[in-house]
Amino acid sequence: MSFAKFASLLQSAQLHFTRVDHFDDHFEGAWSKSDLEYWTKERMIDHFKVADFTEQMRRSVAVSCWFESPHESAAMWRLYAPGNEGVAVATTFGKLLNLVNSASIVADWLAGAGYVEYLDHFNDGLIKRLRTHERLPNTLMPFMLKNISYKYENEVRALIIAIPPHEIPGEGFDLPLNVIDFVEEIVINPFCQSWLSKAVADVARHYGLESKLRESSLSPDVFYINRRKS
Image 1 (cartoon, one colour):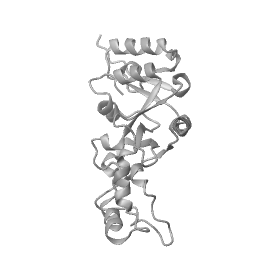
Image 2: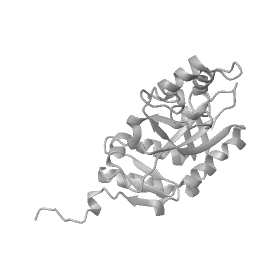
Image 3: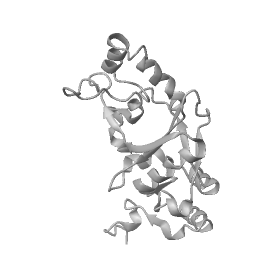
Image 4: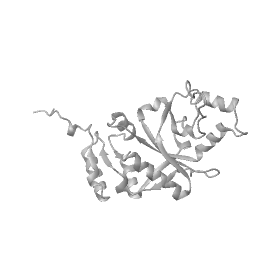
């Protein structure tokens, strides 16, 4: 995330969830082409239009997106912390799940977290993959799908779902958290200048998180070959 978003996260002690219909990616909350054809042309459940319901739910589902990997990704740094600024905040899946489960207490909404499934929306489909006697996919399954072109993100997604007829506000939803407990590590952008490292350290120290600072494994400062000119 950007340095500004990092500072906002600590200052507000809230995790922001973006409403699905506010993402740029038009595949968000979409059935694959073949699944959509199945729901719209071949089947309704007791006059319940599954495809219409899922589309309407785009205004009632908000998500927080995370990248999971045992290694850092140079591509993710470049995409989500451009300009050689920003930080990565790490937590555990258990802490993320516990946090979103508290949303049901805050607003009496549904919540959960899990791995995103990547799908070729034009040439593949969930219903195509079903074996004999397997149940049809859940009407909210598209909110845990992304197009195959985003597979490099290795996304773990936390969801908050407003129960119809309620909707998530257009500006999204902010869920309170205990920053010290929630944050496992704060990793400084490996491509940043020294002033940013100092600024991140100062902000982390202010919120009692200095011990969680870690230098990026991609930083030239931790590289094992000394290439300084003599």
